Length: 118
Image 1 (cartoon, rainbow, N blue to C red):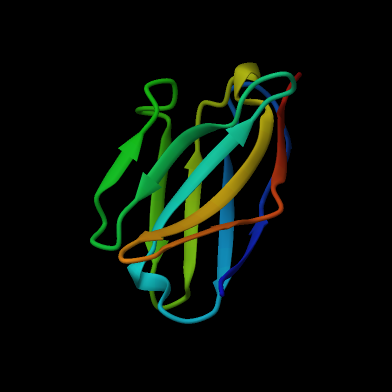
Image 2 (spheres, rainbow, N blue to C red):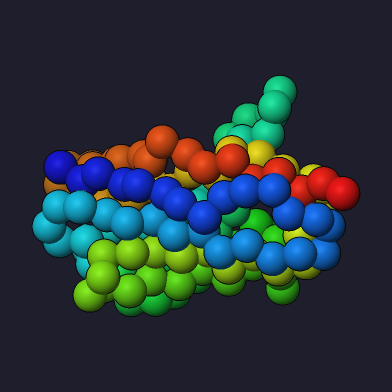
């Protein structure tokens, strides 16, 4: 069992920056693919970025060059550095941990609100 707790959301002006953190409890954090998803009002949840246990990253086209995902396997934490924020980045951001082996383990955090507005 893995519990995920996000932090770092808030209100920021367009062009500003925020760093989201997701702290994971439980064991074997390093085996999980960690991801950040977001859901805006009236829209489906979408992948923002993810990172494998080995550090390979994947980004949505809409955030490439602006967002950076990273992980610290000692602190059991994954981060999302968001720069050059736009109003369309406004959403609830969710942390996800997934492991696909003989069984699939899939965990979600409670979400943190990011609002980009002047």
